[in-house]
Length: 180
Image (cartoon, rainbow, N blue to C red; front, side, top):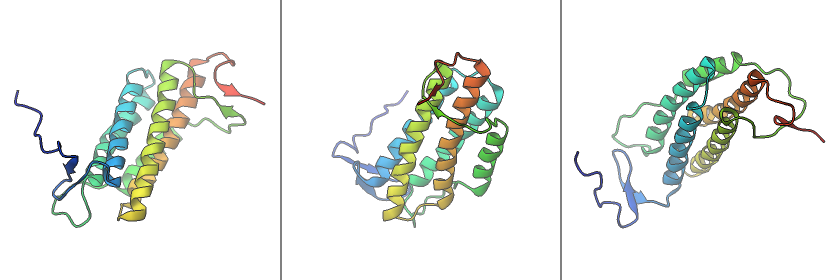
């Protein structure tokens, strides 16, 4: 195996796809790091799932998050040709959400339970952070609006999936909710 280091980032910069080098503290790199972390958190959540509907949706989400990362790593006007998050990606996630309907929620949901449930809640919080970073980036530079919609929908899906899995597991009432 060849070496995995290049030494080009030793001075605190990194290269965008098909474009310039930027500081590792640049808003685009912050967003990219959170997207990467979100994808890894979904991978952890995926490892403990048993429900086929959730497994399929999480695998699809990881694929789309690679596209999100490629888009964020490419500055507008770059010559790099990367796939883009599409309206169809958002719709596919919405269809998955319809398949795991949890009905009306009348209480706060605590982010705890089995490993399968807690890891979905954790992934949701990481995706929310990635979404906030991408929104911040969009205030400074052009960002595909479908990418923002997708991240928003993904965090909602992860919450819904956590509640759905919790109910399917029939965990005791002491775990799932907080009531005043």
